[in-house]
Structure formats: structure tokens, C-alpha cells
Image (tube, rainbow, N blue to C red; front, side, top):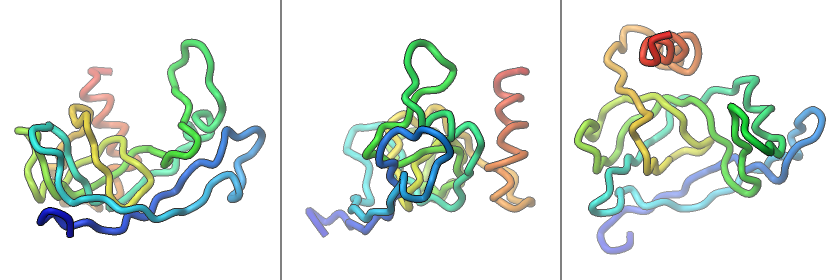
Length: 149
């Protein structure tokens, strides 16, 4: 513990470099870093414990070096992959989220994520279905609803 704030190990899936062709296991690696279980003081960040992560076809597009304007942005080699996920809020500086809330949104492929721009996260109010559904069918319905598609 540093300064009274608990620090834990954080397992992450890292993209080695941009991918050409079909992705292979060797294009990624698993590493362990550490993370403090507290959001920075004065921030509106969320600290999340990731529960479910999606693995969607569009992630392959993001493994390429994307240039020019595009709907997608490239992953950053040397950083964790990211995608839709379901998580539990461990700490919050944002007025709309509190410790214990279940949320879904784009998160890192890691055990814990510090989200500095949580406006794209949504609270899960209906837990009468498996939470994993929010990384698939239910997340697309929610996106369509919020975007008024």
C-alpha cells in the first residue's frame, strides 16, 4: 500500500504491433502491472473491476494501422486491447456513478481499468439477465436506443 491506497496486480492483454493478415496469439502478450484502487483526487474518473469482455470482429480492423478519417481508430501497440465490457465500479469521482454500480462500455482487456472519460458508460439497471449479455445483444440494443437509431 502506498499512502494508504491499496495497490493490486493488474493482468492485461497487450497488442505487440500492428497486425497484417489474420491475428495470431503471438501478436499479443499477457503482462501484469499494478494499479491503485483509487481514482485521482478531483477527477471524474471511474476505477472498474472488469467482469466480462467482448471479442468482436471489428477488433481485427483496429489491429491494423488505420490512416486518414475512418469510423475506427487503431489500437496503440504496447497498450491493452479494448472493447465492450461489463464492470463493477470500485471507486468514482463522477457524480452519476457510485461504488458498487454495475456498468457497461468500452474498457481495457485487463482486470482493472481506470476510465478517465466515463461519459460513454451506462449503468446496468436490469440484472435479471446474465451480465454477459451486455457485451453482446443487449449492448447493441442499448447503443441503438441511446443513439435513437
